[in-house]
Every structure is written in structure tokens, then in C-alpha cells.
Image (cartoon, one colour):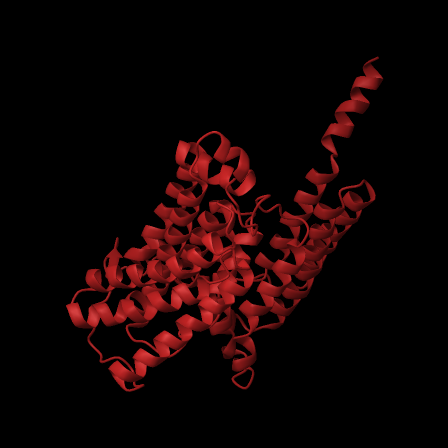
Length: 399
């Protein structure tokens, strides 16, 4: 009897998914060993840990945990490759790429993605696919900086940009909810509409040139003095107000969606709209509310780009960030913290891409494609594995 109990304990200890998790951690550690602040110069340890991670993944796959085990194998192989490459790099170049300010840059690039992804979560949890996040971000970016220019206040610019994104979301909502148009096609049309509107008014109002300098910008929150160059100061000491706002948004949106009656009603509309209608929930009203809120949040991310980060506007300044945000939403399984984690991944890849030209100036343009490559890999890896709301993309007809 004691032998049987011991076997059960051993089986519990070597659960395949747990082994895969350890392998995943070892694969990440294989790369981290070779970059600051550790900077292991011998390729032996990164290679050893990466191979160990891959073996853990093989063990997990052989015991039935294919998804987790495959992930551990991929991370182990990447850990070996990236770790060995890092040991071949000079410490001077590594110190330029992997600094504490990399965290701040990651948050900067992740912020607009998170705003749009959280907005997309509200829309799609209610049952409406929002491919138009890119266009709503673009509207927020242009009208946000125009508002800051005309009102002389970043607050005015932010409000005007959010309203512009909400108005475009109304267009998408009317076609998707009441006219029951194809939501994918409607979202693509909204993106082209936004591109046309912003392009036209950019020429009419600014003659196609950059917005005048000196526009009121969203301020930074200075937690430390400018003379402080410690790790915390470089990473978190001077972040923009909108970065802290989006962190709060992630927590609030989770609470609203999963801990309040409003969130339960929104999710009911996206899972079983007919059942929700039967118990007295206004499916049309909640879907309109969710889509408009989605547009306003995406526009806030676009306004951050121009009013908070760049301080100017260039045509099509969002450059596909709305689609990356949509990928982050899918990768995060339509949940706020998951979407935020995916946005951080994409933000990190963008931040690293801007620093990699220290290795090759001629390949600088190629490095800029890194975030989009990561997006393709992430989406390809979760297709068929993430579970969207059951009724998403299906127009509801009230009977």
C-alpha cells in the first residue's frame, strides 16, 4: 500500500504540464544568462539549459501534453540560439540594447496596443467583431493632435480624439448590429474610411505637412529626479501618464468584465444572445455600448501616439498597430491581463527592434519588421486553441 501511494506521489510530481513549465522557464533562462546584468560569455551554459528545456518539452509531449511540451521545445531551441548569439556579441553592444530603459520603451510601445486590445475585448465579448480598431486608433491619433493644437490643451485633444473614435465606432455598430452586415467586411471598410477621412483633413488643415511644433503633450509622471540614473528611475521613473492609466485600465476592465453584473450581461450577449434577451437583457443596447466603448478606448491609444509620444502627426501614423492589438486580444484569449501580456511581448519586440541596428546599420529596416513577424507567429500559434465568445461575429435578430 505504501509503495502504491509513493508511486502516486511520484506521478503527481512529474506531471507533464509541470515539466513543460519548468522547460519553458529554463529556455528563457538560457537567453537571460547571456544578457545584462549577468552576461555569461561562455556558450556552454545557455546551450546546456536550452537543451535541457527542449528535453523537458519532449518528455511532456511523450506524456500527452503536446501543446505545453511543444512550447517548451520551441522556447528551448530559441534559448540556445539567442543565448549563443548573445555570447558572440560584444558586451558594449549588449549594454546598449539590454538596459533598464528597455523596460520603459517596452511600456511605451505596448500602451497603444493595450488600449486598443481592451477596447476590442469589450466589443467582441458582446458578440461584435471589431476589425476596425486600426481605423479608430487612426481617428484618435489625428483628431487628438488637432484638438490639442486648437484648444491648446492635451486634455482637449484627448477628449476630441476619443469622441472621434467613438463616432467612427457608431458607424461600425450600425452596420454590424442593425443592418446585420458582415462584420469583417464592415471593419475593413471602417479602416479605409478612417484612412480617407484623416488623409483628407490632414491635407485640408495642415497641407500635408507635419503638425506645428509646441503642441501641448500628455505629461510624464516623474517618480524620481532627473539626476537619478538607477534601475527603477530608468525603467519606471518617468513614464507617461497614459502608461499608468492603461495599467489601471487593465485592472478595472477585468473587474468590470468578470466581477460586475454589467460584465456578465456583456458576456451573455456574446455567448448566448437569445437567452440573454429572454431574461430581459437589451442585447442591441449592450452591443452598441460595447462597440462604442471599444472605439473610444482604441482612439485613446491613437491619441497617446500623437499627443503623448510623438508630439506630431504623420499620415497613417498607426502603421498597423490596430491589427497587432487585435492579435494581442486573440493571443490573450479575450481577457484583459492576457491581452496586456501579449501587448508587452509585442512592445518588447518593437523596443528591441529599434536597438538592434547597433549590430548592423544596413539591416535596420529589416529589424523593424520584427514586431510583425512576432505577431504572425503568435497568431499562427493560437489559431484553433483560443476560445472566442460563442456568438461573436453573428448578427442577432430579435424575435
